[in-house]
Length: 282
Image (cartoon, rainbow, N blue to C red; front, side):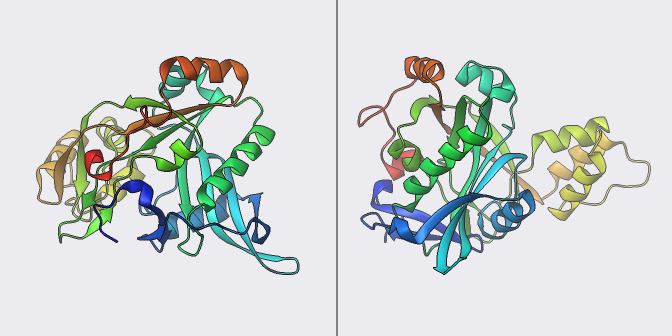
């Protein structure tokens, strides 16, 4: 299938951090699947193995898509992770409630064997489990990153997408988030600005952040070198490049009547309200 095909004509799938595309007209057999809450370590192992980012967020709840393979037996074929938003202001800004009353749909990954409509079936049930397990949570924020990323060898390491799964689930579309400049390693990973701040200010966790930066290609810190000077030197090295980013697509979902009403006043839905075309997303 052409990479320039309209986004609605395929469903993205993953295995070992590689993207696969399934035709959009497939239908799963619901009797073959179930959902269950995952232990954090199991969710982390699955997500880091298969999701393109290779990373796992600070999770509040992880739900697994299980495929039945025999009497009393099943195996994990997908994960939906509701996490703590990276920006603590996003929930008050978008959902209109205190930070701990909202979550971000941080990771959604299904293996390539799951047919195309498996996403909506799975996420709808994951949302129900979220409401049951976290009754104080009244809203969900999710982001669709439209920008593809490529590594230094010209390999695509992250596809762009416009959030068709959120459209299918009637999330409200808020628009684009703020544009910004990303710092990328040579293998296409984004350097966390929060991690850089920890190093510069010698905050808790700065040693781990520094090790990660070196693992991404930064030169070793010299003996006696100030943290700020080292970060600046590392970012000037050829280990990193900068990429202008137009801002992610922002989708919102209210889980109770009051929050749904609030979300409905600041978002759009439907054919005219959602972003549509793959090529326009980039």
